[in-house]
Amino acid sequence: MAEAIARGKLIPPYLLSTPALLLYCALLLTPMLMTFLLSFNSFDLYTGIKPDYSLANYLEVIQDKYFHVIFLRTFGMALVVTLICALLGAPEAYILNRMANPWKSLFLLAVLGPLLISVVVRTLGWALLFGKEGAINQTLMGLGLVDEPVKLIFTSTGVVIALVHVLVPFMVISVWASLQKLDPATERAGLSLGASQFTVLRRVVVPQVMPGVLSGSLIVFALTASAFATPAILGGRRLKVVATTAYDEYLNTLNWPLGAAIAILLLVANVIIITSYNRVIEKKYAEAFG
Image 1 (cartoon, rainbow, N blue to C red):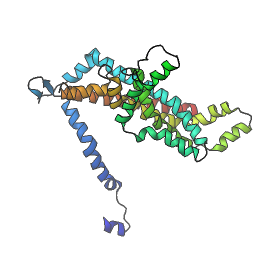
Image 2: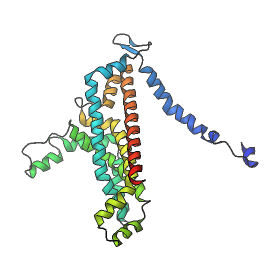
Image 3: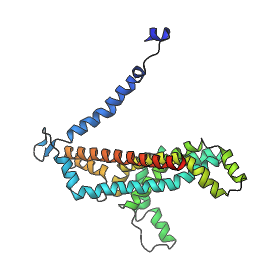
Image 4: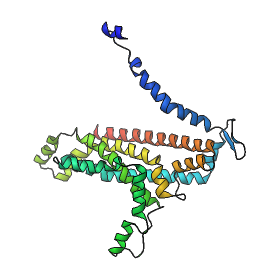
């Protein structure tokens, strides 16, 4: 290879990418393939995993209404969290982009702060805030806004709030990247031509930052649908999502094949939803602004 470089010969691209591809296969594809194969095995309470292959685990998940509720809850929460993050993150990124240093750096650090804290520590902090004797309920009752503690822990509302807290930075970062390509002169040109600030924001800024909003939505949706620690701690045993259900099958009932099937179906559903969303949005975006 050194001689080829010395002679000025180009190295084929596939040779340059081979080390990364091998590492990718070893760390990601191999475990996924093993999980996929495991999902076809059967399970017996007394003998454990049987080395036979069938679609029984997939049929059980598809036909059982119990799993239907869990999947609908998971993707419903993912949709709500994504919408809230878009509504909060896009304006937040726009305001941060217009700030001057050092305030821009300080506020950006505050926005990215949740990513610097362990997910378990952060979620336990929310559990303390959400409790009956937590700061939120004590404040609401002290102000006379409620007569009794509001139930936030072990509810979908509490899980959504905690997930929004940690996932908003991903939306801010995505929109921020799009704003870096926005020429401030286009806004000033719109204002100089008599357009209001709202019109400039709607007709000039929003279309140009929309790719960042869309990419941020994909990231937030995927992370929410596959979230485990936050729903497990704040949702408890009664408010299950797909990730916690797979975990329970692995470690509580020891039915690894069924847990593997649930995990694979979550992956497949995530890929289908995200891919469809991406194609539909890209098509509409191209028609509207192409």
